[in-house]
Amino acid sequence: MRIGYARVSTEEQSLDLQINALRRAGCDHIFTDYGISGKGFDRPGLHEALNALAGGSTLVVWRLDRLGRSLPKLIELVDNLGQRGAEFQSLTEAIDTSSSGGRLIFHIMGALADFERTLISERTKAGMEAARQKGRHLGRKPSLTQQDVDWARAELDRGRTVQDIAQCFLISHRTLTRYLKGTSRPMPEQEESANSPKGCET
Figure 1 (cartoon, rainbow, N blue to C red):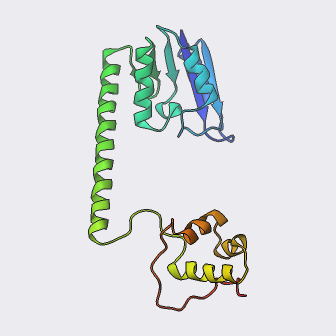
Figure 2 (figure 1 turned 180 degrees about the vertical axis):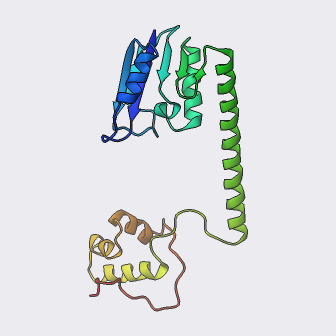
Figure 3 (figure 1 turned 60 degrees about the vertical axis):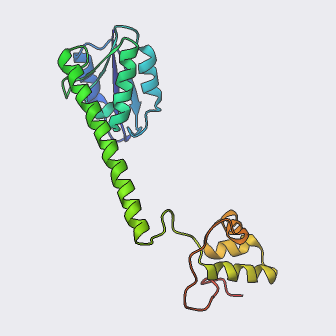
């Protein structure tokens, strides 16, 4: 049995080109996802296509990126198909895992995916080490300075609410509470004296 799968990421696009190609390729059933991105693999049409596969079946797509845009995830999915006794075919790239050449291509793709992950990891570690050596703070930039926190505490002493003060900084009251409790690290004090945020003068 040949199971076809087609996908477009926006509602302005048409599935006709893919469906016609899949029919010409002899697909017995065609499942689709309409207006869904290929970034994730949690798609109803894809789930239906995978559930319809049995041993000896083949999942067919018009082009590889219709199945997904993450190479490591694609490799994982096709490997899972092989473990279930199913094959995979991409018409545009002429990939067919039922042939020795098709299996070789996917093994090469898998090696390239592993190489890419290694390079990304090494670049990330090198960048973090370089930042540490320069004394840069790693991670998300703090929302408030130490002066902001001091001003917020002073306003609380004057009777203002946490919600009101948080609105002045355009942050949630939970975020402000973490700063007030000292569980979030503020930026260092600036040279200027602490002033209330614009529009929040008392």
